[in-house]
Length: 321
Ligand SMILES: Nc1nc2c(ncn2[C@@H]2O[C@H](COP(=O)(O)OP(=O)(O)OP(=O)(O)O)[C@@H](O)[C@H]2O)c(=O)[nH]1
Image 1 (cartoon, rainbow, N blue to C red):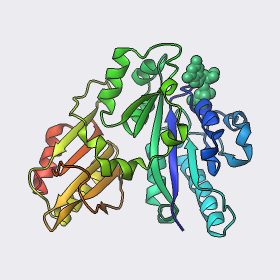
Image 2 (tube, rainbow, N blue to C red; image 1 turned 90 degrees about the vertical axis):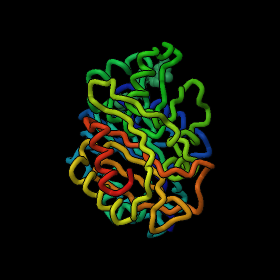
Image 3 (tube, rainbow, N blue to C red; image 1 turned 90 degrees about the horizontal axis):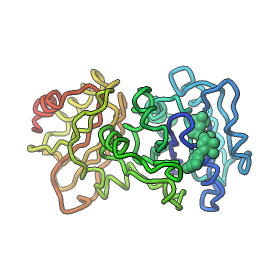
């Protein structure tokens, strides 16, 4: 059975997640989409707002997607997987998880990857983070969760551009937090199924779009920066795996996202797609060929309070820089 693609929809309180999801679910292309909603308040309301598809929406108990609720999430996912395997959900082809506006979404990605039972059944496709063009800058300044939601995104969607044009300062802030993500506006985005699901982790990797981002020095108070590294020497698979394992173990909290295409000395000819979120290293995937003419091994790392020199030292240790 194929793994169910999962889209994670995140964004600070009131950024427009439920509004967007209600719009998206009216699209026939998303007919087979199951939705998990996780809310911050005591009373779950969002699932009521998604009435058009209520039978497809499961509201989790209140709370953030932090350690406490991770169990509920894991249980909900496990139930979906079990029912699918039993042939109970023949029409379900995708899953959207709307996170609480107060949640750091990294633990959810961790839950999906770290539990073998879930990794077998689900595949994180895209992380979409909504940022309110009106209040977004303030949320980013005041709430670390908001910054982490942006840092972990594959796509950042600016909402409420009908009310205010996003300020240059906000755009610079977003770029400073995550130069690798695609930056889109909701008023110019009609194809919501394609926004939520585009096989970003793998598809983007093949096209290498996110690898073309430039280095960005930390401008944000939270100390989150995007580092682009080009490896000058091919590491061996073992030295690279050891180094990444150490990085994830020692600095996992601060390693928000790592993606890369690396050609190994002991496996030349094609690159391997590397993906990590915090403590979680996803199974590397060997591509059939380089996605474009650029055959340099390269990585994009979004991290908090991690000086570039520290990263360079670690890669040098693995014989890669
Ligand atoms: N003008 C305008 N209003 C919007 C837009 N998107 C959302 N809103 C409004 O913003 C408010 C909050 O939107 P929600 O969709 O509830 O936001 P949310 O992210 O689900 O909120 P939480 O569940 O609290 O995290 C609602 O009143 C929406 O109608 C937009 O693009 N333009």
